[in-house]
Length: 340
Image (cartoon, rainbow, N blue to C red; front, side):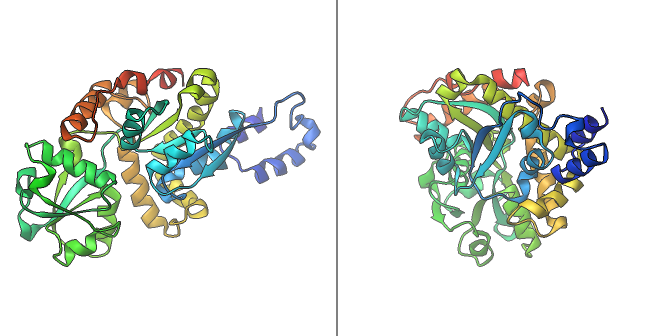
């Protein structure tokens, strides 16, 4: 009982082994238990390297919540959601930590994908301009130069959503691919506004970005920012595998919501950008805010609002980003979240 409580309270393996020795050695609790199956490998392909906002993943690793589900977790780093999805479709990973756009575009091309969990139901994208430009609403972007990370990025897709909300097209602005460090061109006056994210905006403020106006994409269409996708075959043939992974992941997410300070400290150990605890804490708080929605408050973390997804599909068709109708309900599902 005491050891079980220690494990549940998030002991590290080293601490657990010390405690086991103190209680009379591993034999005292039969560790590992005879007849227990070896952990099953689970590979999560991510859109990024391990970064501080993913402290919930580090917690599930550190505190043994993947192991608790009989899983041996591997983080497969990447560069962009499209790459994460390609890893899964190619069989190099089991779960893609990816954005919605590559999934919609992939399904349109015939990819057999099931989206099983809504990681960040809140849209984190925005369009930022210096106060002096007097751009306060979507219509003010008409005729302006607007920076995006790249033409294939979520910054561009969400800029189009913002423009679409008032009947503007991409051709009504001049879109400029300025790279990820796109606040430089804004400050230097090379663009009138720049499409970015909540964490990108926060980081720019730390580097001296002055007074700005921010147009949030979520005020016009709250597209989920990131989701977990698996091959359709995995969802059909290995539903228990999917549920066990999501159970461990969600336990980490709840822990990060409840313990932002501890999450910020844990990120120091695991994240490539995690050296500054104070910075980690701000990033964790921002990400925690995007993890919770009205739907998740009612139905639990990971829940999809199908009405929102239908609006996304309709909007992307109208924008020409999609060429044909997609059946949202056949791609996105809440059935795994309902079982957690």
